[in-house]
Image 1 (cartoon, rainbow, N blue to C red):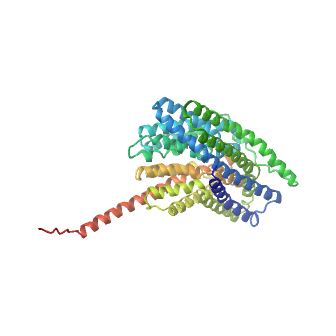
Image 2: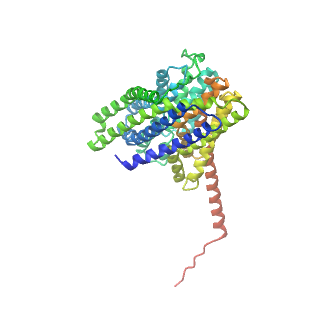
Image 3: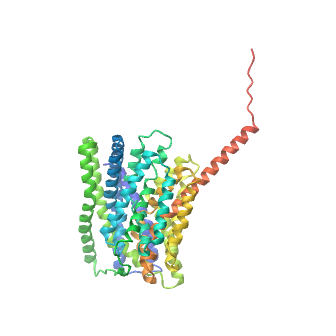
Length: 507
């Protein structure tokens, strides 16, 4: 395995975690002091989360990305539409079950059984991955599928139980995390590679956009049938530790628990890959072994990640939120703190750096990576701040999401198709691991202490973070298009003013 790549992934994970740690420490030593055992547990959790995220992303790149590309190419080569769609459904389900963002979210939701929520979301991803593959093969315009799908989403949203509304939209953002995103995107690239038309590159994007819709619809539909009770929510009871031995015992217990859970989650993926390798892929021994080693890193990273998150990281996020609602000034500080965390979280998200460089290349430098990065940071900061403000104001999340998605869909008809696909993909990329692991627990802590309804007011933060990039990236694309047209007009005007006359010598 490439040691330099592993080092890079660990550094990226460290950059993603450090800003949150610094902000939390600043709060804990000033406005919201916490007990020493909470602080020590949080710091240990931060270490495990950093190691886990680094190992996980390294392993996913060495295994999930390659598996997705190989399977996508092999499926398309078969030219059998039924086989392609059927395997896409199966893969969408089994890859989503192992998504760490979804597991963290599902364990946070109080009134829906964790397994039920994970499975219903996984089915939604599988169905819309089928639709995404069908779009690539047929060349259907993404904007029409998005328009029809989100129209259906908001029609259902108006009639849905409020206890399921915010969670449904949060599920859409949480499913396109570090496990699902590289796998699905690489499948799209593999499938689109067989097309030679000019739209093939643009059509390889947009898979995450569609796969984010499936969970929203599935959870909204679940709300009409599932006997969950919003009254089941019980405010968090914080564990206390008498000494370091108790803290060590909590982490060791967490490691054992999540080692088993992650093994069960990854088993279907490994089994499917092995079967596909024997009967279809038939990869050479060395690449095959490298993928297996990558799966081992993925497993170890996911175990450490979930242990660090659930034992120490998320707990302090909730605890910190409860400290910041005592008066108006503290509430303003909570809003500002959420916005600040949103800015730094997305700025340090590794997948966002890939996205910004990609846009810079596609626009031939018209839209720089720095402009994209700043725009996304601003968008997510606004989303995080609005999410906490919504807790104090009691505003229904539908009245924020409806106009937001309306603007995003309207922009899809005036910006280049490629920017629309990247924008809707970026929504899932921006709502990465740190949003579900710390920012959402922070909002839950604020809402619990304020006396609000956690289910309807605190949940929805992931959805807000996933929505704002849809608008920002398309606006950036629209500005790039306007500048490009202006440059062409200036060039045409210059050509008219300065005629080039060639004098030919007559012999």
